[in-house]
Image 1 (cartoon, rainbow, N blue to C red):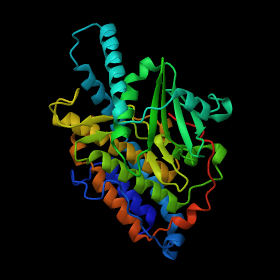
Image 2 (cartoon, rainbow, N blue to C red):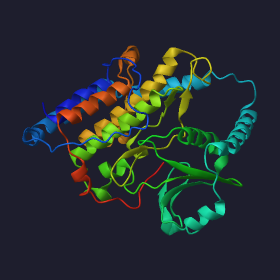
Image 3 (spheres, rainbow, N blue to C red):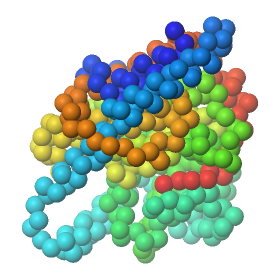
Image 4 (cartoon, rainbow, N blue to C red):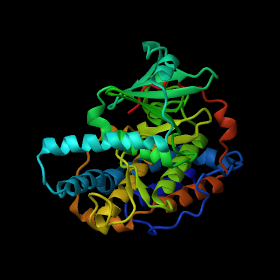
Length: 373
């Protein structure tokens, strides 16, 4: 069976109805294993063109007809969850209370995340110069910083921080407490008046979206071994979030834009502003029953499926208009868990004996990154 056909089968499982439920994550939580892969066999190379064309069309048809509607359905579920919050105070009072609580939490997070000097960061970014600007997102502007010891960092500067206090807390809590090879390393943070700075390890190869879709980098095509490496890494990172010992963490914003690539094309999940920690159904704010909890978890699975579709077909799924189907409401318990998805896609790479180390050295880096949320 050709590699693309196997990935197509897995994609149907991820986006549609198949699955074996939840499993406990048995792999080491820091994902430190190193795999040695062999070169693609001749049978794959010869059958690639036919398999790719057939599978791409099949995947698109299945995706558009019955799988994609989960995106909007899950979004509505989340909106309904939020609408259930008791309206005990006015919207203005509630907003001010949340900002105050977020500010207090940010101050307390100095115990788990390194607090940095604004002067030091400003100097490392050449006073946030235009030349060091590497991206512009919804929350703020990204800058490249160079430390005196030569290390490169990425700094997210959030000027109008009040409207993003909750997202900042979520980002600090998640990346400040979880360490994994497929999560973006958080170096520290800074609070200065109404400005917040989040400092990360710099990812020299930018984000996955640009490698797949950007016209500027159209000639820098990711080879199949690297696409599989990215897919396995993202699945591993999500499995770590979903099957943690202290509760499930749901990302809720999975896309090719939030997947960053280091110099070796190891994927790193970023943008945890919408992330939630589900410790139990009873004490997680806004989550009132098992079906709501599962809807949130399986939304990440769906997001991974969309990324996998992009990796296989090269389509820009962010521009698609999706419709809803109430029949799909019965299928949420049957979509694969991320641990099962990770095991499946890892098994595919082993069976196909895919090599990525030699291919990595042939890929030019994207510097600077062109987009960042």
